[in-house]
Length: 123
Image 1 (cartoon, rainbow, N blue to C red):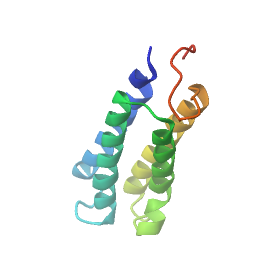
Image 2 (image 1 turned 90 degrees about the vertical axis):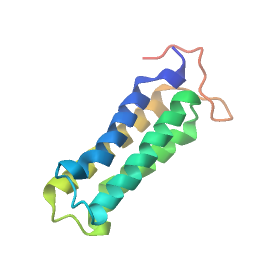
Image 3 (image 1 turned 45 degrees about the vertical axis):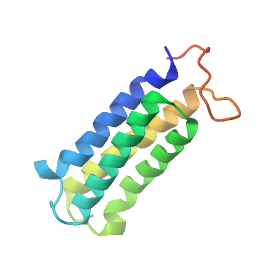
Image 4 (image 1 turned 135 degrees about the vertical axis):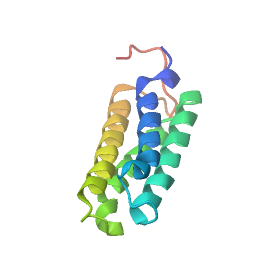
């Protein structure tokens, strides 16, 4: 299986979609910083993961890790840490995104140009 068809990217698309729609299900305040953060980063995650399905590059995983860290600290930086459900939702998505990206970096070797090597066995 080619790296561009990895299951991790499909999960990331789903995480981005969930993050984007979560304010509509009560996991955001619809107009505040939490919702805006969910909308912006939900779209970024979906676009980045969709692009990664077409052409996988290692730098995409590093960006996903950075977004994961941001989603984890955003409730404290943006001031919605008192909204526990919203906070946990964004932190959980951030942890999942970070963990999946870390897995991909560890499991899929790349060449000197950051392109995945497709001839090795993949899990």
